[in-house]
Amino acid sequence: YQRRVRGDSMADHERVLKEGPEALEKATEILLRGGVVAIPTDTIYGICCLAENTDAVSNIYKIKGRDFSKPLAICVEKLADFSKCVQVGKFSSLLSELLPGGITVVLPRCTPDLNPHLNPTCSTLGVRIPDYQFVLDLCRSAGKPIALTSANKSNTGNSVKVEDFQDLWEDLDLTVDGGHLGKPQASTVFSISATDNSFTIIREGRDFEKVQLALKRHLQ
Image (cartoon, rainbow, N blue to C red):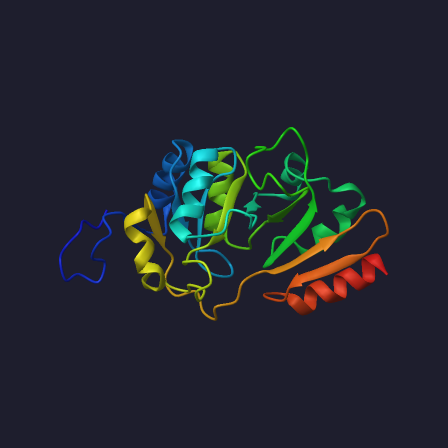
């Protein structure tokens, strides 16, 4: 750990670890006991917790100052894990082509396998498989779906380095420092309907052109 030192660039945060095996072990331990962790991803920095832990999910909303009516996405390690959270149906070949990657896929959620207090007013759920090894390793070591959202105060800019969300540090149990992530671009979010094979682009972001081409090829 980097302990708090007045005047240090990491001031006011006692728990910052460089991305690596030690950070993975500590992040896993914290998630399993109900904590909230900031992590690098293939898009921007995010904050996460176990999707099944209602108190931890609530803490994410409080930390961000996020409207409780706005849903959180979840993150899993592999496509086979989608079925624990959402109804994949006939879209597995499409998802296999796009994942892992900088996208969030919105599908009908599964019940009662998923925490009913996660996005309780939503019949759908956004799911990610980031193209970032640390996140995949964390999903595997935690062994459960992870709720994930951007590491920032609501309605502020996205974070590409840990200093960008310094105002959140004191409220987090751990921040994993993966360095500078590059251009601040969130995931492309889209929903797909099994009823009529339609799709809706909810947000343009990373891998947008790849998503457009794949959706048109598979669904039109």
